[in-house]
Amino acid sequence: MAKVYIRGAGIHNSGTIALVNKTGTWKIMEPVIDNPKCIGCKICSQFCPDDCIERLVVEKDAPPETPRIVIDMEYCKGCGICAHECPTQAITMVQVEA
Ligand code: SF4
Ligand code: SF4
Image 1 (cartoon, rainbow, N blue to C red):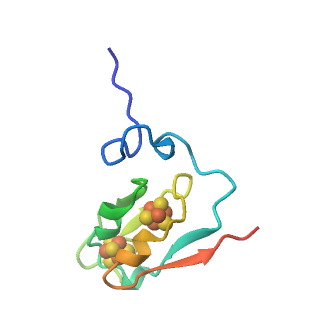
Image 2 (image 1 turned 30 degrees about the vertical axis):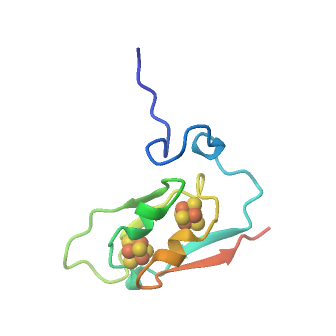
Image 3 (image 1 turned 90 degrees about the vertical axis):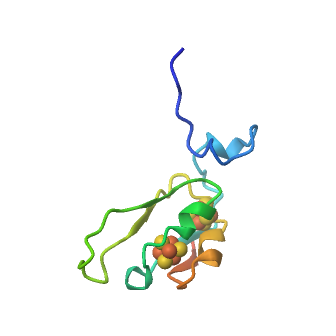
């Protein structure tokens, strides 16, 4: 039987609707990353309930403004947990433009 990858399935409780559905138009807040503040620690990724933060591979001597994570906004629900857990306050939640 073919395996089907479901985003976030490893960390969600079974039956959670969010793990298969993309975010609809109801999202009111979204995270914005201040790249120079991000140290690439991946804590935000470990706490994101929708498993939509990926850490990028970055050279050690890369400029500070180089992105170290990327957030898949199609799945981000705007919960703000990543911003709350970030040790360097590199993530700010902002209102989604209508
Ligand atoms: S928790 Fe903060 S510093 Fe760590 S990777 Fe995420 S945004 Fe960057
Ligand atoms: S706001 Fe919530 S869903 Fe979106 S990236 Fe942060 S932790 Fe994940």
